[in-house]
Image (tube, rainbow, N blue to C red):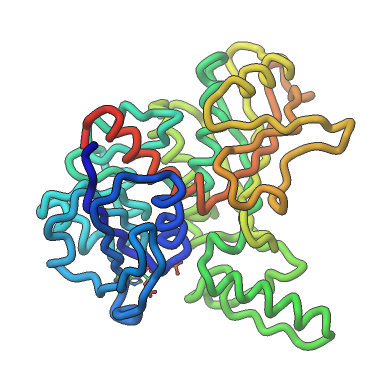
Length: 344
Ligand code: A2P
């Protein structure tokens, strides 16, 4: 069996660390593993399936001899180094927004559009985490009933905003409960003109606003979903909200379809779909919840019901681990698919 020289750019970050774990868990055929980050982490040792590996600073020479390079260190790092990695002969799986809407770059969720990988020119993009989770859940419905319109609201965990946001939720919660002043400094994002408390609060603001009043995160859900589903005419509107949950994004998804699906038909279709687990027994108070699902691979769907306000509509409640399926796992599944098809 062929073995691969793999590099992870952003190895010390949340997604990078999860990738290292997943390479071991899924027995990825590694020949070597190079861990790359900024100069801040140079020399640090991390445990990996290949034993302890010393983290190196990312440079133009980092990609010599690399077959597959996973990038998860922010858009500017990808823009700087992904072309160099491709030039060196590596396949790049990019987990940032740098190339997602580039027509020459496939944007892939294997359960939805695995075949798109065949058109790559060196870079394949992994979608935004909320987008991936939604795409897995809606694809089987779209295949059966053609989706015309989606109204989605997200409930996004703090880990999606990095390690500092996780620490902020911990510290702010402790301060609040101790009756001490809370001093927010991280959310909605580091350079924002004002910062808001996330403990015991919700922040309806992820990334920057545009002139229409939507955030970049909301537009990602619109544009990326249309691209992944190969359906530019699908009408989508989103509201993205940060919630005081450590890990797992949740989404309330309202769907209008061309053909009517009953709730039980939708439940049946979703139960058969790959990558989805239906958790839907409201009588027994059973539905997906983020606190229970951290570390899971699947996208969980519950509260499946017909929209009472229109003739052909459904409501779904969807939860997924955004660091796993929303990022690291999806990236790895792209490469696993390519290996199975002898494309890499
Ligand atoms: P470092 O730990 O050295 O800063 P997260 O989004 O979870 O905070 O992770 C970001 C990841 O991106 C980290 O691994 C971080 O490394 C890495 N990173 C940040 N800036 C750079 C850079 N200029 N070059 C390479 N890696 C970077």
